[in-house]
Figure 1 (cartoon, helix red, strand yellow):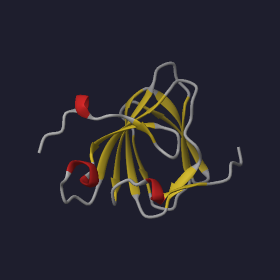
Figure 2: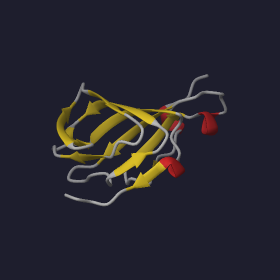
Figure 3: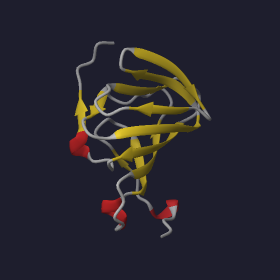
Figure 4: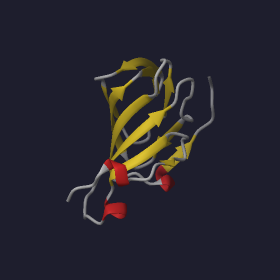
Length: 123
């Protein structure tokens, strides 16, 4: 199966990031147990603090730089970094750079809005 990025229509997820579902079993008709998306956080923007109740996530930074709040920690992230986010862990991604922050995001089980829980903001 081949999915062309140019045919994938982006949408805004519950956490506020712009997403292109590059491979998702429910959208692309394959029996997979994970999904792959490209997320974009614009300059000066951030996602809402949230957690996924079932899905583990892996982020790989394709472009830009930012700050990942992950549980009680904060990490500077940049192109080439890979981050692992366990299900249930609160997280948020802020673009602290001068270009769009672009992230390749793998979720298992596949991403779905209903698995995303927005949490209170303590920052």
